[in-house]
Image 1 (cartoon, rainbow, N blue to C red):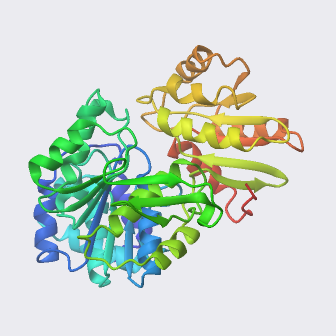
Image 2 (image 1 turned 180 degrees about the vertical axis):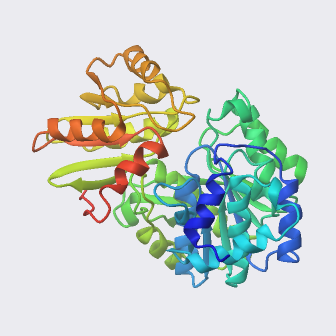
Length: 430
């Protein structure tokens, strides 16, 4: 029986997207069988706690501007699983995914694969079949035991190390850094873009023999007073400054992400040729939904951000504080149970005036009482409960005055369904 892409996606969902079985051997073995060898493309792996998706999209846009054909693989998705697979910035067609799924299913060991492993293998097969020049792959969880790490990347980027997914990765930044550094390889050009580096990443790179560049040691992001440099910033490598144009994505933290991406793509041992003109073009054109994304619902400005840990919430708060609303800001918020909810909401306490909360329908959803207690613990007093996310959003929208803004954040599972109802609505000037 011929199955449609919807049939295949339903079949994959039955495997339970929340099931995690760390380990790369299943994926590595099946990838080797189906690919018939190593990929013909330059493979770039991107790991880190925050900034992975933004960095993948910046690297992809820059490589496209440099004339390469590029496949991008990210996770999770907001509205449709096909968002995870892009070729030259466009979603992969259903026929290509169906062909990849059929090839995976034909392998005798496919029954053992998790949902994420299936999708990762599908990305490998689709990108190889398309004959692309560059694959930019976002690591899903950690690094060492993630399915993306089944491939030996030619270039690697670690964006930042923060506290998230501690049950799987460890309770300290050092432990988490050690897991993220599992994507490194001997001789591999690698950039570590964290302004507060942990020793475990540097130690792992030294032990493996990776060619590691670190922010603050091998390159730096420097503000300049002169207006002659694009937006007043330079990327400095080996004492030589070059202009770093501002990325189209909002937030000061995106400067750091951009600097790390450019440092990697222009690493002296990179197999890619990426001129400064391609950097400027790519950074000016990069797009990523759900990251400090400003849209409109009717006349109301609505911010969407998937921030779900303290570092990402702090970045969101900094941007909102730097762009005061004419009226109030009203939050629509929920969270998964494994997130440090009080630490997530605390940075927003001073920039949000009122909060609407609701439970998620996900199996891993946090209890609504725990969410409310976390807000109270963060000193937040104006909190209203609703039965579901859409009810919370509609209640906040009804309450909002002409100059008020909504801020929708806390999880991909919050942003995805609420953003979907605004599909096609205009992007607001932020």
